[in-house]
Length: 390
Image (cartoon, rainbow, N blue to C red):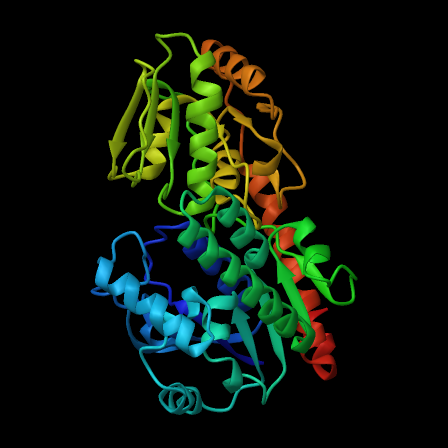
C-alpha cells in the first residue's frame, strides 16, 4: 500500500516541537505496518527534508505568528478574511491548487491519503477527494480556538479566534465525515469530533523516539524543577500563566525553577527562584538536570508530548489531569493534582526525595499500542488487503 502523507511541515529530523515528534512517530508506525509512505508539504526556511527520497517539497514557509512582522500578520488576516480560509491554512497558500495537484501527480500511483491535521488539508481541501483518506486529528482545533478566544487579551484577537473556531468546526466535521478512519491523539477527542465509535476512530498512543531512552541511574541535579516548551503557542501560554500565577506563589523562596524556551513579552515572575533561560542546546539534558518536572497543561486538546517524554525518561513529575490526555498509564513517580497549593507541595516533596523509575516499560507499552491502532486504521482504508495488516 502506497500512502501520500499530506502535512503542513515535512520532517527535517530536528524534532523541535511536539507536532514534529508526533509526525515522526506516526510515519514510522505506518512504515512498520508495511505501508510505503511519501510525504508532501513544506519545509521550514533553510531546513531540508530529512528523507528527500520519500518527500515532495512544495516550498519553504515560516508559519510562526510570533516571529512574523506586523505587516505579514495583517496580510495573513486580510487574506483569510477575503478567502474564507482559516488563519492557519491561509499561511500555506503560497502555492496554487494546480501546483499542488502537479506535485501529487508526481508521487506516482498511490492508494490513499493520510491527511495530517487540519491546516494543510483545509488549505487544499478540494484536491483530496479522489482517493480514500485517513484523517489524523492532532487536536480538536475548534475547541482549542474557543479556549484561545476566552484567554485572549484584546477584542480583535478574540474575534479572530472565534472566527477560526467557527470555520474549524465545519472543516473538521467534513474531514472526519469523508475519512475512512480517524486517528486522534487523545481518547476524549474521538467523541469531541463525533467519531467515538471504534469502527470510525482510534487513539494513537505516541512515543518520542524509536528506542527507549537510555536509563541513567545517576543524574546531576542543578535545579528543583524545569519546564521547557514553546510558550508563545497559546495553549502552552495558558498553562504557563496558571503555573506562574497560581502555583509558584506557594513555593518556598529557595525553590529553584528554570524555564526554557521562547517566552512572550510580559511573562515574568517575582519569585526569587524562577529563572527564564531561553533556548537550551540539549532539551533532554535540560530536563534531566531537574529534580522534578512540572507538567502544567490546563487547556487545549490532543496529547502532551512533554508528559510522554518525561515518563519515557523515568523522571519524577507533578501533573495536572489535563497533562495526561492521551496517556492510559502513568508511572508511580507521577503525582496528579489540579489544585495549585497541592501542586506546589507535591513539587517540593518530590524535589526533596528524588525517585526515578525505569521508563523503558512505558515506552514499550506505548509502542505496542501505537502499532495496533495503526493497523486498525489501515484495514479500514483498504478492506481488500486486510490480511496484510492483521
